[in-house]
Structure formats: C-alpha cells, structure tokens
Amino acid sequence: MYRGSGTRGRAPLLATTLAAGIFVGFVLSFRLDEETRRRLRKTLFELRELPFRVFV
Amino acid sequence: MAEQYDVIVVGAGVSGLTAACLLSKQGLRVAVTERLDRLGGCCSNYDVKGFRPEVGAIFVIGHEFYYKLFELLDLRLEDYLDWKVIDPVYYVYFEDGSSYPLPRDIDAMAEVVRSISPTDVDGYYRYCRDMNKLFGAYLAFLRRPLPALQRLTKISNLVRLAANRELVYALPVNLKLLFRNMDRCVRGYFRHPRIQLMFGWENLYAGLPAHRCTGLFTMMAHMGRMGYYYPKGGMIAIPTALARIARGFGADIRLGAEVKSLILRGGEACGVRLTDGTVLTSRAVISTAHSRVTYLKLVGEDNLPSWAVRTIRRQPCSIPAPLIHMGLSRKLEGIRAHMSLVANPREQVDNIWGDYYDRGLLYRPADGAYLLVSPTFDDPDLAPEGKDVLSVFYIAPYRLRYHDWDDVAEEWSWEVIDYLDKRCLPGLAGMVEWMDPVPPKELERRLNVAEGAFFGIEMSLTNLGPFRPNYRSRLIRRLYQAGQCTNPGLGVPGAMISGIANASLVVRDWKALST
Image 1 (tube, rainbow over the protein chains, first blue to last red):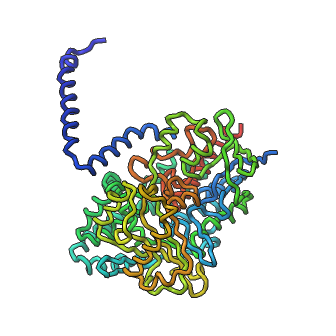
Image 2 (tube, each protein chain N blue to C red):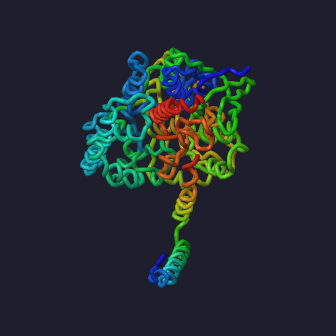
Image 3 (cartoon, rainbow over the protein chains, first blue to last red):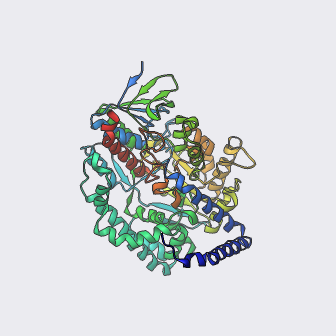
C-alpha cells in the first residue's frame, strides 16, 4: 500500500511537540495548589476507570 | 429440597417490589427476600415507642411518575396511596438568626428572593423558565402511552417516548446543565450568596460537593415548586402498597430472610442460598443491593475476574448521610415546615468537604449544615399524641482518621442537639425523650449499604449512564441489577424506574431464560 512521505517526514516534529507538551504539563503541575492537584488526580483516576465500568 | 421460582428478587426495597409487582402480574412465580423484618429498605419508617422516623427517603418528587407505574399495573394509585403536598418546601435558618420559608408558589418565592436581594429576581425568573423547559419535556414524556412491558426497554421505543418537541426546546438547557457543575450553574443565575445557598444545596442529595456535582441537580430546587409529596403513613406507605399489590398477584415476600450467597452454575445465576440454609432456585435473580454487596459478597470475589473486583471496589460511593433521630416529649414550636435547613455561609459548608470530609475529620457542630425533617408536621400519627419526631441529616466522612464512629456518635449527636437548641430550636435539648444516633457505620450495618451511602454510587458525570452498574449484568448471566446504584440513580422514582427496567428485561429475556 502506498504511504505518503509527508507523515513520516513530520513524525519527529510530532513526537517533539508531544514530548514538549508532556514536559510543560509536568512542570505546570508543580505550580498548582493542593486542591486543584487533588481534583486533577481524581479526574485522571476516573478517566482510567471508565472503560472498566461499562462491563460491570 | 430447594424451592423453585421463576425469578428471585433480593431486597424488598422500592425497586425490588416494583419489579416483583410487574413480573408477578405477567404470571411469573416471584419470591422476594428481605434481610430486615420490615419492608422498604431505605424508603421506610421504623417504630420505637410509637415514634416512627424515616429511615432514609424523606419525600417524593415527580409523583406524576407513580401514576405511570400504576398504569402498567392496571390499577388506580388513589386506591393505594394518599399524598400530601409539602408546602412550604423548606424553611431556612441563616446564621444571623433570620429565617425564611421557601414557599411552593413561584411568585411567592419571587417575593422571598426580592426581600433578600432585589437584583436576583430577574435571575430567579430566568431560572424558572429554564427549569420549566426541562420539566415540560418530562411531562410530555409522561403523557405518552407506554408500550407493553416487554417492549418498554427497546431502544427504538425509548427514543420514541423521549423524543418530543419540548425535549428539543429543553436540549440547550439540558446540555448546559449536564456539562457544568452545580456550583457554576447556580452562580450563573444568582449573585447573592444567600440566594445561591437557597437554590444550590441539593447537591447533598447527590452526595457530592457542588463543584463535583452535575448541574442537572440545580433542577431539584425547582422540583420543590412543582411539588414535593409525602405519603400518609410515612414513606413506608409506598413499599407497603407495592407489597400488597405484589402479594395480590401471587408473589411470595419473605421478611427476615437474609441471602448468604448467589448460587452459580456455569457462570449463570440460578438461585440464592439464605443464611438459615434454605435454598431457593430460579431462572433469574434480580439483586437490588449495592453493587459491592451484590458482587463482592453475594457472588463472591472468586467468581469474578480480578479487573472487575478492582473496578467494583474502586467505584466511589456517594457521601453517607448520617442521621440523628429524636422522639420529643411535646410538640416543637420552632418547627415551621416539614423540612428545614440550618444553613451556614456557603464557603464554610464547602470547607466541610475539603477540610473535613476528604481528610476524615469530624468538624465542630457550629461549622456544619443540617437538614431537619419533621414527618409529624404533615402526619401527626407518626408520633404518640402530643409528641413529635425530628430527624437531623448532616454530612460526615465514613472513616474518621482519629476516632471510631461507635465511640463518638452519641456524644457528637448531643453536641449537635445543643447547637440546634441554641441556634434556632430553643428548648430542643430538654425535650428529647428518645434519641437514636445513626452514624455512617451504623447506617451500613442497618441498611447493608456500602460505606453507609444510601444514595448509592456517587452521581458524578463519570458514574452516570453506561458507567453505572448495568441492569443486565455483564459479568454473571441471568443476574439483573436494580436500585439506586443503577440507572437512573438516586431517589424513590429512580429506584422504581430501575425496577420497571429490570422487569421489562426479564420478560424480554424470558424465552432464553426458560431454555
């Protein structure tokens, strides 16, 4: 199957942007107050649980 | 020798009895087993020395729905239940000593809003307009004739029932409320903190702080304008009526019959084993217990995949709503409504969630907010002649970090009573003839609800719809689930809807179940 060279060419750029986003998010998370961090942790926990809840 | 039935319903609460009524009307042999020696589960009254306080549910909303249920049963509601509308809906005591009735009439309520904050009257009427759109969609849904029971839960029928012009009008409001938290919704309508409190404390019923509760609960305050109802004889009148109907159709209701475990054969539920050794077999089992009780206790962890055990254990419960029940030696003059709210500033109540609830700390009584319920206000027969019943609901964590509820419940309850005596009900402490503190742990022991959460699984967006336990279990075949832990969620009508849905699914599956 033919694959355009564009996607392959852009892959390092996408990976770098993604890594930069994760890094920026990680750094910003240290600046959140305790309450916001707790809410964020709760939201992430809920998102992780969602797919399993459908099958109970 | 095992006794044989077509369907066994575990729990004689409102959902279980609704399912039992509908299934026995279809000609199925139904047995209902109840652990306690009284009907109703969380929707019940108990009797101590003639005082009959509510166990959990305290009023009924959307009573039009009950007519629909009786339509399915080909019976007349008036022959079984006698309602009284609750008016004023609430009485609110503020921290500065001022107090206001919240009347049922929309314009009378507008005058109360005007007396506190004239600039919020416009917001109030905007709020009423939005809520009326939602209520209009609900009423239009109820006006449609229902299809036969076995066709009721078909997606196409549900869409046909729900799709109406009013729903289209209500859709923008619906979406706005669904995806915003309650705190934000209330602030969108009202500016004055006291008005915000009057219209934004019903998150207590969802068992969540306002910032984590879906904005749909903003509608609760308006439901009071549409009518909160109270059955004559107390909330137990509802399960008693349902049990009478179910028995009339031939159902076998057993009180004091605790289920020890479900009997499984080849991954299918085919009966129950009671604690006294009795074995009841059936083609389907409907469990109305909390999903943790159903799966982890009745089915057993060994019969479930490890991911399911983890998920069930982790699904968050709503807050416990512990209670203090009191029998009073004479009529309490200070009580001016069926339900009263002893309010504190919003920030202070919010702090209970953040500073105390999540950290497992017990707060000072002066920092809390309390819902006082006096069932004798609308039905004096619920207490001996000349006496009164009062129940106090409050928010408290299930696990205390530094104490055990069994050790501190009584002392803390007296502190709350003293606080209420000083704050708004003078003479209360001296009138207490009988007191029954029901902290979260006791609630769990009495009602068999995980973590004392009689509102079931929490009503946050990630625990609604497909993320609540399914009616038709996907883990155990022939096991069905009803009650507040399933859809649509908490409340007496919510439990009833789950019972109807269960009955419909069992009837639909009956051919497959019979083979």
